[in-house]
Image (cartoon, helix red, strand yellow):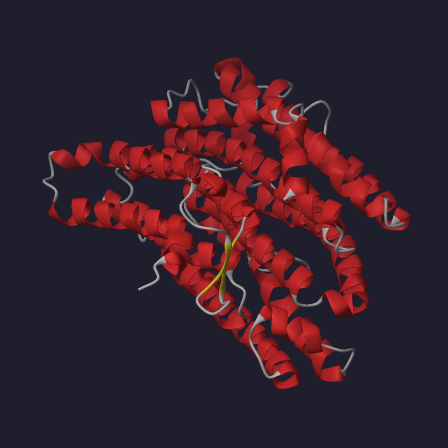
Length: 475
């Protein structure tokens, strides 16, 4: 029997192995041994993440298609999964202190196993070369995510956010499946490569593309499919919000990137105009609504909407430079966003507050956490010399190289607007006076400290390591 197909799924096999070990540990482990659960989860998943960076040339199989062409293993898919792995590991490290608090009364292990189960679906999304496998991957990722959003069952907002998320997920999946049915009707196949050869500018193709794009637009929080984002981000536990805003969004962006490049390349004139308009209105509306927010989780929800608009600029012309810039942007955004939510998690664990006013005078009581937040916010804003500046530069350069000067100009103007509302956070921390009920000194645990240290170092250093972008471009 040929096991090559299964060897290509080495990352999925490793992830499922970690999942099964943790599941058995949670079910059969003694209560005394459970105090090492987070350490075990982080170590095992850390080993899995590290193993993912082993080049395919050193593994006993050749990259390519598996299972009749439904599944793809390549340097790019491996890289995308590695990016998701790094983000997931950081979320696991940041969530432990909250999980052991008194406000939730569930087994800690459930959280880790559910998170890993969503990641299995995201792996399938990234490696899918068939619309049916892509759809299964999206559903496998979305259903456990609804459980995570409603994880804090003793808070009304968490339960409400879970209900909203599952309804929106069902709606978006139905819309996307409706679009796939149009595409299948045109091409008579679900395979990406076979479909790409026969798609033309027919009304059914355009309808299928629009509905498919709309379905994934919900997952990425593109305007006008963004209305659920702020409510769900606010209601979900902060660790879950971080996972949604970085890892889940990144996986959906990767899936859309592959579909546009591998399926709809021959009809690029259609989705080029769609993405142009969607990018502009997403950036503008995300920025304008972020200015009005008083809750920091809602604030970064609209920030993530705006960031999704910038990500779409990279894919607008379907060039290798645009694809590399998009993957690089997602990596930098993930690291900066998780640094932000690591600080928010620490503040919420200490005070229970998520309002921006809680950060007034934050620098006086917590200078290190304030510095981490400042670095992450400046990276999201694109301030040089942080990594966020280089990610925006590569995105804009890829678009400008194809003559999209108007789009780049609009994005640059909105970068100034984004800088204004990001500076509101900086103003609160470094200029505003502390309130009478200030948060006070925060003592976060070692895991969160390590995650924040890693993210901070990454947003400082990664922009100067040109080899990262060059490596992505060469794949």
